[in-house]
Amino acid sequence: MTQEAPTAILLVDDEASLREPLAEYLARQGFVVTEAESAAAARSLLLDMVPDLVLLDIMMPGEDGLSLCRHLIEARGLPVILLTAKSEPTDRIIGLEIGADDYVVKPFEPRELVARIRSVLRRSQRAAPPAEETALYQFEGWTLDPLKHRLTDPEGAFVAVSTAEFRLLRAFLDHPRQVLDRDRLLDMVQGREAHMFDRAVDNQISRLRRKIELDSRNPQFIQTVRGGGYRFVADVRRSAHSAGDLKQGEPRDSQPK
Image (cartoon, rainbow, N blue to C red):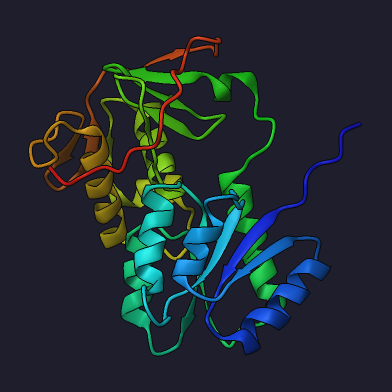
């Protein structure tokens, strides 16, 4: 029986007095932890590793955590938990709006952080789902693979999406041509235990539109229903995996249109 690989965590924080003991504590909990003292160091490490989750301090000299967070989500599709100070409520909101999965306020109880790590991993890395839940979603040449958390465009190029964007798109694809209000989307995408709110849903939809729409200002797929929420209007079909379903491509960053 093959033993499951331990969870790999990238811990990015410029304060060695917090980073080093936290890394030791997480290692004792069974995680494999790689430390980075800056965003630049993290980017360098990411050339040779793919962590399962990133713990990211917001306030750092040089490139700040929010900038790195955007890169991790848009270009790498990695789950991110922000480590924030009590004085940074605006930064926490921005972090959640750009796709961070959760945040923990310093000083924090390490056991709480471990619980949040495991909660985020459960949401983003569900193991062995039933076959009907792993069938590919296809619409207008696009393909969403729920097993690999992978989105490819009509040319076969991989489009990086955050965990929240992936769950949002899947919610729409599960309910094509239905009007979904913000409350229902909140429940589908994050659950009521998460730090999500109406404005964040709108921002996630805007970000998703920039990735899948030809013109995000005149959306073809995700339409706004005045007073009602949103509706996905493309025809969606499900199909089983096959060797030729997905062409391998390099991740591309989406640009505002």
